[in-house]
Length: 189
Image (cartoon, rainbow, N blue to C red; front, side):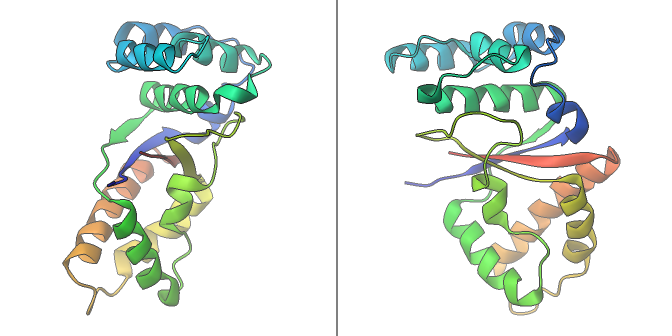
């Protein structure tokens, strides 16, 4: 099974302020414009979830007690919030490529790990997802440390997969830098 990563560059402070904010605009945007909403609601229903995507988003925004049995639904809700707030980069790096990149980058003293971007946990409090997607992130501080590293890293002997991966990461970082205080949030499927 190929597990890919979808990454969002999002305004970090705005995302982190959503839980308990009771803001209605993100819910309305997601319910009106988020393309995967209906298919996700069908998938949730087949899995026996009492929640729709909109209800899960609303619970997070309202600061409600989240049902620990539905962490996967809440992970999709966090992704929908990232979609509403930021810029999406569809999964180009498969898990095995990210693992190979982390092995290549670690001895070069990379300040971040790609593993964290897909598997660190949610940047907003939700129950642990039991199924994909798993969630991870790089904070704005980590983004600012990663930027110079990825611009300057020597790719001598890296191979084509690593070179393509670094190019992809530089796209993510460039977008985050354009918005000054963005973090990166990744969803691994």
